[in-house]
Image (tube, rainbow over all chains, first blue to last red):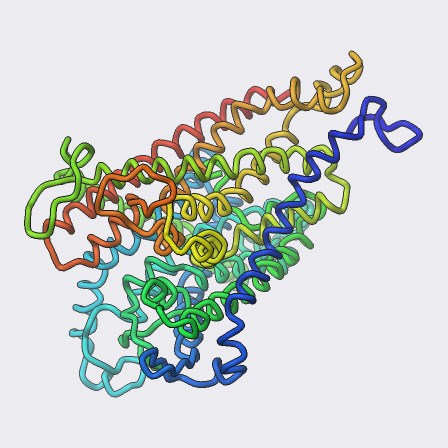
Length: 320
Length: 283
């Protein structure tokens, strides 16, 4: 900051400059509010018609004018949480390796490569999923022994597309986001924490554990950020999850997510109520992701107060 | 060495091994995806892909010339919306970083960055498609532009913060107003970085599909009109990928290869650029 005069403004401030730049800046928060408002107005028909029943019922039959969105909530949460279970340990491992363990020469290239995972477009993940991953998953399903097929988790015909294929790809897509924020957190933990641990004779892992414990809220924030990404992921999931609005526990069953139903049915929704029902799903998806991202950011911030930790963005060099 | 110490050392070694394995585990899908996409896509890439129009079903050959042009038009529109707003907001946030508006902008930029792209598409649909009752390039560009704004804001802010304060002080000492100091001295010091960032953000949104599905829609024909539906690489790849035709699948791989090639190129360029800038600004 420059020197400020007695009026709290630097000598050559001028009045126009903060006003004009401020006007552009105000647009950003307005945009977020605007999205919420527009989506709410556009889903009024559906909100009035169904009320809360919309989220409690599970029959989705546009022809009959029956709209129950429970299967989409279920599929969204199920696929995202499964992806979270798969990706969080790996992402944390990567963050630890890149912040504490990696040889210096390897660090930058490895950071770049892991962040490339975030730069690959969703549609490419989906394409690869359809032609490479789905056949593999189908083989796995066929190879599942008969006694396992009785368990609800593994029921159903071996289609290949379904919850498992979608969650596997989601997990890969989430890794770079979680890893990069977690790495920033580990960097932000004061080095005295680790040094103190080493001084008391701690092993490498014990010292890292101290740092993890110190930055635990931020680590939770990093994991939530990945979750936020997974909940809204559209193309890859649409191409892999099988798009079947039926609630099922089975990993092999084709299911459906909120983002996928909007992507698939929006251009066909000729009837105003149908359209509004889809927008309402979008509105709820918006509210959920905003809540999760806001929470994640606050958690990450609390750790990074002494040093600036950038919330919400891997991708420094690899993709802005 | 006591048993306990041995146990702790073994546990520690195991965790270190797990972390190294995690890195390898993440790089396997990366290699796997690049290998398959490029392996399928390169043989399908030829001059026709870039210069010819899509052929009707059943006729082999053809290309995605209209989709490539469409993607360029869409990201051009997006840049037209996002770059001015993003850079000027970024200047505000960096110059007045202690104000509450700056915190609000930072916070909402991060929030906006986390909003699913399909939801941004819905917003663009209700504001730019519904009123005119037609899908259009404008609506698609608006959706992509909104996605680009938070990227540009945060990036501009960070790059401006990297500019040494002595530069600003020098400009102010010579009697420049705040505005003049920013636009002549500080911005030009950060400009190479900002331009790189804009290019990478463009490569980023060029890979977006979901928000285009019901804004720009798709177009089988050559169209450069902004008030009409327009083709794009990503929507075309999607259409071809879920089609039952082998020839279309080949085209989809080729399209994906072009996308990945562009993104890799820009990312590597940006990385080289960033490192040069870091060296420049290091005291």
